[in-house]
Length: 213
Image (cartoon, rainbow, N blue to C red; front, top):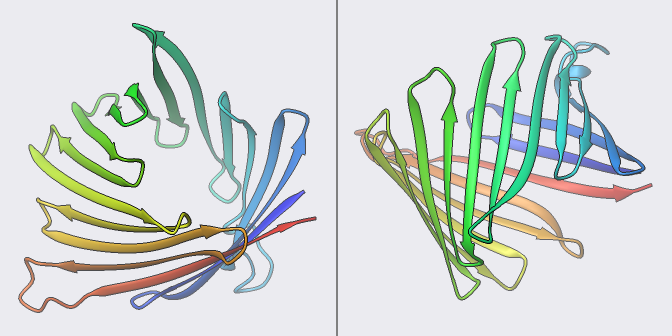
């Protein structure tokens, strides 16, 4: 059995917490997660979610207070001897279906597309990994006719520094994250809207503790 406890602090929204417990049942994982909203006004079903997952095949999520199911199915097919990863997601309550596809040319180059059925919108993204450390990711939103850009760099094996820029909102973001079994997991995010007269940064930080029971 594995458990994870996450704490988050946002300057605008103050603190928050979440916990997840996962149990392996053969090749299927059973997962339950809660947030601080589950206990803040006494024990309740608020923030409680249940999931069944078979890695690489499907995930079924159930939001208990909203009585909402979310289905996700994954598959990989070969096109010209190269993998095309496909994902089908459907949210029952809002009747929303999303299709994702990622075509992997080689370990350094891949192209992905995201389309919400009935929306007329499609998002395209190209990812290039330079020498296994630096990743460049330009993306294009067809409906908004806009570009977003992301650059990330892995250092010391466990640390990742990332910068993003959204051309429509003119939001610049910086992120520092670490995923290490020895020193723990955390993420610090700062963003600023360059279109605002007062360019005040928004800051948030979160940390995760993983346990094996």
